[in-house]
Each structure stands twice: as structure tokens, then as C-alpha cells.
Image (tube, rainbow, N blue to C red):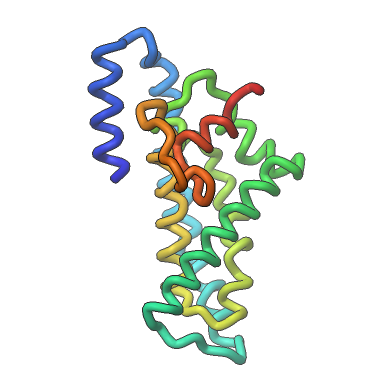
Length: 181
């Protein structure tokens, strides 16, 4: 989904080149290599932590359509709490959100403009779901899905989406979040 929106955004950029500064895009995309490196370094540690936490929980939530839906909602809630803490706690603002909100353009590459050190704290927000008995692979899968879902909402090329704007984070809702107002 992000790829198709990115292609659409690229087409829009070629029609209106002044609305898309290539320097800004390069700056946003420059965060990807250090994030991939940090992920490669920390993934074994967080996999170990997730497995350890998952192994000591007294509950085990069986994998079913209902539990997967619940895990998705739980992980989306964790992302929201992490995001909110990123705005409220100075250390998390400096670690992540100051970088992410530091652009005057609003585009898909901006979604990936995050400090690689965020990966030191992000998984902590998902541990409660492991303690409740969700399988570590399910939590990790939805954690990654929820993160990458954020890419497509960083576009000006999708307008309001009616009722969805009231209940989920859509491009229109997230544009307001990023606005200087």
C-alpha cells in the first residue's frame, strides 16, 4: 500500500516539482540506513527479550482470528501510547519526535525520518501484550505492521476519508497532527 501511494506521490511531484524538495527527501531517506543497521544489531536482543517475557507469562492466548484482531488493536494502542509519550517526554521527543517533526514538507519519506535510537525504547511499549499472553511473533508482526502503516498516512495526496477520519489515523488526521497550528 505504501509503495502504490509513494508512486502516486512521485507522479504528483513530477506534475508539481516545487511542492517536493529533493534535499528534504534525501534528508528523510538518509535515516533509513542507520535504522536498518540498528535494527540488525538490536533485533536479536529484542527477540530474546520478547521470548523470555513470553515464556514467563501465566497466560497463553491461542492464535485465532479473534485473538489476531485483538493483538492488532493492542499493538496499535501501543504505537499510540509510544507516540504520545514521544510528544510528552522530553527524552523521547529528542530521541525520535524532534527529528520526525523537523520537516516543513509532509510526504511519505518523512515517515521514515526517525532517529535510530528509537529502537532502544520502542519494544518496551509492546511488552504488556506479551505479559497478557499474546505470542511474541504475533506482537512483533503487528508492531512492524503498525510502524509501516504510518508511511502511507504521510502524504498530501489523499484527502479526507469520511468516517475513517473519525476512528483511525488517516492522512488527513495525521496532517493536522503535523501542522504548525
